[in-house]
Length: 276
Image (cartoon, helix red, strand yellow):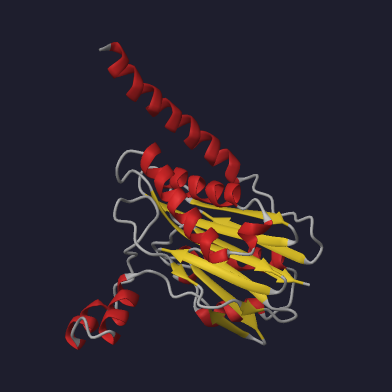
């Protein structure tokens, strides 16, 4: 009887401690890289939210770079995001993984989903995630939920990912002939995510069709929805076109998010990488 009561208490206390450590860790996320070929900038904002549930991480291995951004949702969304990023980084361990990005992304997504389900109570915490791997000037990516991956080239911010939101799903189903035009139109303004890490009904990941060959001075931009839902795409292009170091560009974008008069702003995080 005592054991039955003690276990939930211990789990609750562990979650409280993890929450506390998580909030402290937000202020100490570094982006210094050992490889001089990569320059990375990152900045984050609470938006109008009371807590920060975005989390990001990077890892270098055999000259390759992994960038991961997770956007948590729910009571323990910050923990779900942290579990996701940590899992991706922990699995990015050898050359065999780097040479098989599709296998790595799928394995990391499934492992993250399993860890969240095994650690948190049902629906307490879920997460969107965007991950980018850069290897020999080749970029690959995966996505679950509502983050964005884009490449800034010659003044244009080119979307690489679509995002797993209801409007995107409706468009695909219409193209496949599975729903009517009327049904599609009624769903096109709904940008709510339909797929997340940390749920029993976790679905397929959005995955690159073929590696993208990066050019000199390309910027890889990974964003949570607090960035691209707050700022216009043109505004992002104008900032990125200033040609400043990635860290200054990231901070400038987040400053614009903070200054926005939008009433309801989600947590905002942007990571910008330039390959020399």
